[in-house]
Amino acid sequence: MINKIIRELVLNPSFYLNLLKEHIYITFTSVFIAIIVGLFIGIFISQKPKIAAYIISVVNIAYTIPSIALLGFLISITGIGNTTAIIALSIYALLPIVRSTYIGISTIDPNIIEASRAMGSKEFQILYKIKLPLAFPVIFSSIMNMVTMTIALAGIASFVGAGGLGVAIYRGITTNNDVLILIGSFLIALLALVVDGILSLFGKLVSEHKIKKLKNKKVAMVSGIIFLIGLFILAALKLEQFIYGKSGKEQSTTGHIARKGLANIAGLITFDHATVNSKSIVVRKKKKDAQK
Image 1 (cartoon, rainbow, N blue to C red):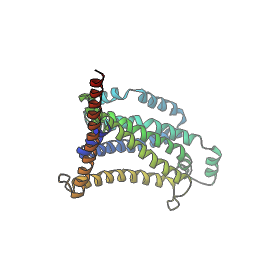
Image 2 (cartoon, rainbow, N blue to C red):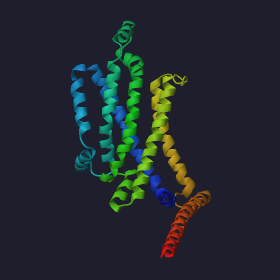
Image 3 (tube, rainbow, N blue to C red):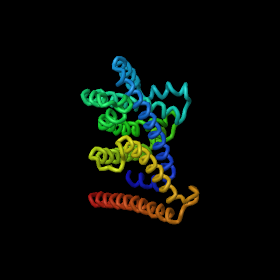
Image 4 (cartoon, rainbow, N blue to C red):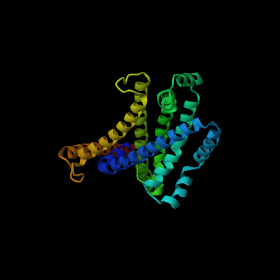
């Protein structure tokens, strides 16, 4: 099975690179929308405690809707494609952000807020300089969980005609091809682990005040998210150029050698397995003949 996976990746790298880029685009677009809208709703309901319970309940109800059902419902409104997937993923990603923002701001010590008001701070200054920085650990931890969840959930986007690594899984299911299913699942899991590791490292740097050149944590968070998106897109583009050349169609010399070498390795693995199996069959036949 491993040699089949290696051969498939070597023979069709552009297919999986394109799926990876589409998956990153769908995921991070949904994450960006969810963070902006979720922060806005969370800050709003933290200032309006009377309606907070109702809005949280509505968000919870939306979160309990099965993903397939939500995607099917949105098809009749937005049609098939990436737009439907982005809307559905943004709705699912809203709950962690709204809840964490509301909880993070609501659990701040009221004495700190009263002291800042007594010193003449306005409401926007209190929000910008006190509430959001103090609620940052809670909000950032929910963002980490939400990003990982969105990367995994984006795998079902192919069922509504969207791109992403779910296309490989969907094709594997429809054609009964275990290799495509394993490759798609592995790449999704790998992407989620890499993003989670980078976000964890970034959170530690911010919490330990190692980023001293940045004036506040909010700028660091936004800069980190933009950096991550650019890093993954650049890595995917560079890898595609390495294998196929600048035009994306003609193979570069180095990329051709790399593909040929990997294909030879995969072929040797297959040859070795076939040789061992054939030899074992011959040995078994000789033993049976000797027993007779």
